[in-house]
Image (tube, rainbow, N blue to C red):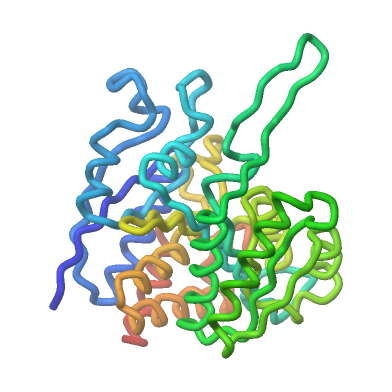
Length: 337
């Protein structure tokens, strides 16, 4: 049996609790994982002078994969966020955000099954901005052929591997004809190499309306950085919120898997936090490692516990603590593997 070394960053606030619950659930799959536990975030500032120590980056480069809890980034740390720091240091160019309905999670929608693929390194989020005198400021939108091509190829490869039927490129090329126009042009060129997958495009404002009215028409959304950030939260709202929203940041050599929600410090230590998003992020991690059967068992285990509705946290209508919900998922997984 292969033993995988995985960098583990529990994070701040509720992070350590949901990470502990997630490890219990993952262990039930039988996949042999050696966790390399390291700290990052507000708690290490006094010791390292930064929320993102070089030892964390070095470990991810060595293990190639990491599971990360939510992190509070201190003001004045030198990073807009630890997440941005990791993406830049490791060139994690693809942000993957699944949004799938889970029976038992309150939502206005049913049968939503969407994947947002977001370019992670350029667009307005490149942070190239400056003041113009006292009364104006400029931010430069950067779209490159290389950045657009590799995220488009990632989206189509992911769609093919996961048996997805369609990729929709999201843009505003009717107004930003050069930047978004280049993104759309390159997406179309890459799409021509995947004749087995349907390709279409939508203007971002129309896409927002379409997702609210008829999300069932869409499958994989291919987005530049800014639109992907906005639409991925919209898609999470379609399936119950950030508490059930997993995520991944993936590069050529390394990948970091993490929930989308924050560290919720006021709930730290109370054994109340919902571990679902981190457990589902671990599902993505297992798939990335090639442990597809284990990933499916973990995914179905989470869904079974939530569908049953007994051993779930308060936000899901139950009375279980974080640890108990993790143990409930583990018991379900053990029946499936």
